[in-house]
Length: 289
Image (cartoon, rainbow, N blue to C red; front, side, top):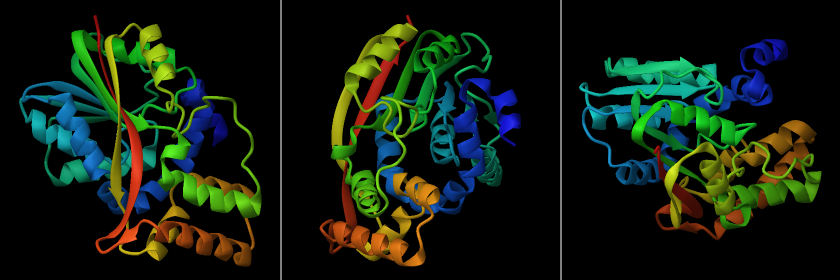
């Protein structure tokens, strides 16, 4: 299987392997993830200023939450190209779109870093947490920019540093206390926090040729589960702790102790309306000259 990914997605074979072999986790928890990230997607689309009739590429579309929202806003006069490297996640996105008979949406199982997009054919590139996984981000954004018409725009959101995002930090800290740190990765390696530094984002976009680059860092809250126990169980299924658990394969007692600690860490964020976890995000915009 790894040979297949290396052949199909040579620029990002490791990421292709991960998101195709582990993508079912995100499929299983699609509704919970969509609920947590719905305000983020709404804010991103508001900032993007979508209009009817626009042609949009949804980069790293995952299971299709943003694709559906984009399709609604551009209407049948427009068009949406939803791109993702994960076949399992795309399969769910396709089903969700088919259920709504959105004929102006097209899906593409491809590596956005190297895929040959139709040149100068779209008005907007949009991504909710889908562009942090490129092996060569400058090359990836330059390739994506080639799909924009002159004057076309980019709008994306990505995570700020780990210390500013307890949804990642708290479960990971509990896992590290019992299992040790994960295998070291190169600085800025592909992953959820690869674009945590605003200077690095600007460097990438500048190198790719984008102008009018703007980055706004915003702190908000993610609406989690009803209880800390439920949110901790969710964190053991999706997120950076899951990679540590998969790599270490702890015994049941150790796994339970990690779950208990994550629960206690999340209790500080539990209130009358459930768990509300602070999140710090970068909203990024730019334009093709």
